[in-house]
Length: 567
Image 1 (tube, helix red, strand yellow):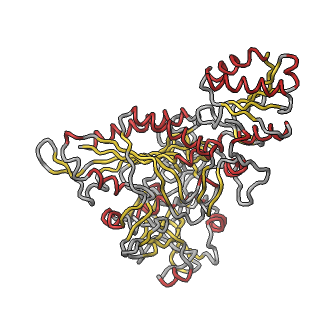
Image 2 (cartoon, rainbow, N blue to C red; image 1 turned 90 degrees about the horizontal axis):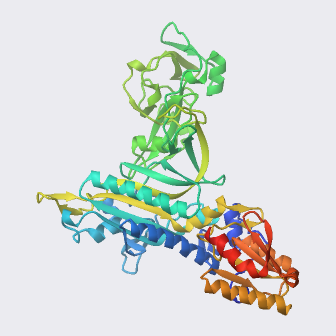
Image 3 (cartoon, rainbow, N blue to C red; image 1 turned 90 degrees about the vertical axis):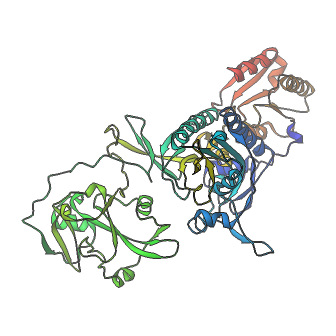
């Protein structure tokens, strides 16, 4: 490709709403442009990168025995109603009606559609296992689209679904997909971690996320410094925290006057007791499909509530904040709530099971209870506390640290979560009808374009890995009016094309500095500068990653490039 013929509209101006490097550089470098909030067009350079990522994904999936299909972008609402997700998915599911008043959704994911595809077409265990995937558009009506391709509304996604006769075989495929995904992300040149994750709206019995490590990541992941344990903060576990001091001694269970002492810090100071021994109450309003209620979550004063864990603990669709007025209407006293004689649902963090010598609210204004003993209390105990920096690893007792990551892949053990409600059955070896046991496996293809840049850029622009770069070599002609420079550049360009090396020739009648700024902004892996040194039989080779320049004899430059690319 010659730059003078290419549609690469680079710009110096930073988009006013862009804050992340990937968003800034992909727009400034002429890879994408914004159509509407969260919706982007891919320009030629962006489409090349997108297709290269897609091809790597397809190559690895096909070699693992998966088969590609393409499902409709639009899905009938009744499929989602039968699976139970139509109400649960929330406002991100874009619903609409056609001219005949039939209800449809724009598919954010395609479990229901794929089950319907297989249903009544795969009828025997002899036809299993089966793994089908597509790389297709998806739509989620994000409340706050931002960060360019990282949180858009329309996006390209790989979603795959496997069907099995039993759970054992599903877990085998689940492990195969984990290994396949590792190969894909390694080929893309990414530094990533595989982490335990929450199943979310997809459902199932277990899931893992693939996180690209980046300071700009929206997700917090917990990583052990001593072993391979890693988990999303929403699913992270820890060993039970050790007491910072000896437990306070109380003469018994008693109510204590604590005038206007409401916060954990105030309570800790008032009693001269570590927050570890205080019982914190976090009130939330739980939203379900057809109802809502106030729920209390009790945990140590030294801990914070992890809302996804809390939401899952009670099976809610969403947790929202609740006002003091609402609490009072339900007989609760804000700032003085304890676990005794409650008329609302409550959950206690599992680390508190069997604990005593605690201090908690007395459900009476200006009073707390000392000597709270949970050994005598029957309650729902479950993990609802957020893991903190420095907590102990649940596997090896090593120190846990928090890192930022960008989710680029997610795999789930679905079981019969969708096959049962959608009545997708097969005949087993005994001739009995059974629901398919399923797994599902997703990759954010367009999101990967941005994730790669978030991990690989500098203050000048993109730095593309060779595996997905739009072109590998940028030949920059310093002065296109110099016939010797231009003819040598054209000859080198044609020789590289003959060697099947992706090359772009910057033959524009522009200043040399302008062309080099574009090279740095766009992020081609290598540049060859054909300039004044050509009269002495030399050209310059530039590595975009290091910006290191090497002077190379002109007759050796072709072999030099080939060796650089192939090593």
